[in-house]
Image (cartoon, rainbow, N blue to C red; front, side, top):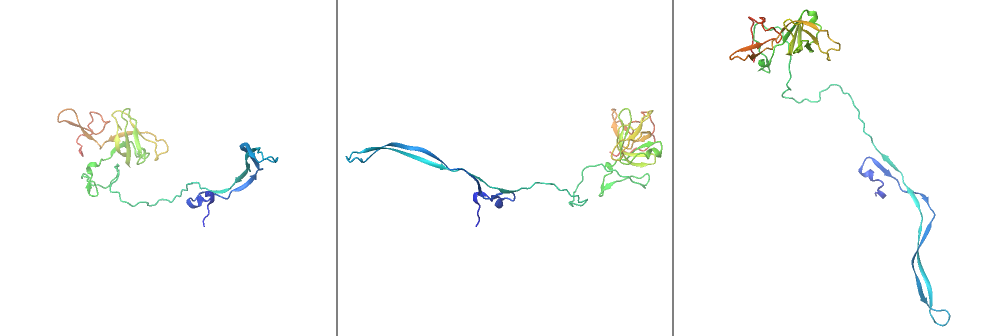
Length: 257
């Protein structure tokens, strides 16, 4: 048999949390108080009592009474509640997904090769797919000494102090006094100019880097552009080179477009 008077134990049947009440208890009982209310009044005739047989008249009143007793009741209950909390546990590095993603997001890939055969054509491939047309040879920022180059770190970004169109590039490798850079833009060398390069502050470097002078800049990321005249093209190999330089005379130029 289940007893649930006044819905006292509703929470046991429907929820895990809430308040469960006990029975009502009387705590205070007041004094009885009776209130009277006149309902009706009038005169009625009744048999006489004087022996003559004549009727006599009587006054009649009908009153209603209500007796009230004031009582106070209370009940107590047990409330069960819960609060939320977050517990974090470091489980270390682990594999959580082994799904195979067929493609990767577009990204620049920097690689360094050694021991290549001189004067040969380089053919690069990914999974036997020729990607040579998408490869750009690193340009060279040549410094005065090996010691000057050793102050830089592979992977950091360098900038030049050119007065206009300042250069910026990422160091891919360091060989002797040469910084091999990728994604170059701007000027790293100018005829008659004293251009220096310095490394920007980053996660690779916590202290300021002292700028060092550039002795020479060799750009392998040249591009051909029309000069305005019909059937005439000019090649931009070094944005900082003099307009009358002969540094590229008798040199082999490769068009990889």
